[in-house]
Amino acid sequence: MGMSVTISAATAQDVEQIFRLQYLCFQSEAELYDNYRIDPLVQSLESVRGEVAEDLVFVARLGEEVVGSVRGFIDRDGTGQISRLCVHPRLQGHGLGARLLGAAEAGLAADRSATRFRLHTGHRSENNLRLYRRAGYAQVGAATGADGVRMLLLEKDAEARAYVASA
Image (cartoon, rainbow, N blue to C red; front, side):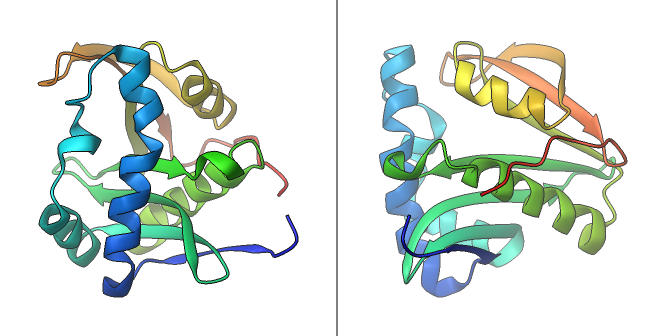
């Protein structure tokens, strides 16, 4: 890649880049489901700003550019909820998604005492499912989201060992 990509906690200064990156990255998901009203595409800038302020948010940086992001929070049951994992299309396939997922898991376990992780992805999102399964996640349910997309719910214990991508 030329420059090394670093993973760090997001700051308020990253919000607009995260917002634009999310919109770009989730276009392929919208196309896959023929639904351009999926949650990541209709989320407001202010909502992203609130998540960066309240939740555990990590970004992947290539120089000053945010090229990936992921969010996490702890629910009422103490489960780490991970969402909105995205990597810029030009950098996909280099292990950044696995690194971001690992950062979210580590942060939720260390900083927020998560003992279990949960995430969801669309039922047709094979690349996402492959990443999550390599990371040790297993399907525990399914539901149709408010946007009409059938989502698979995946979980793993915080203690579970996972494949670690080298990148």
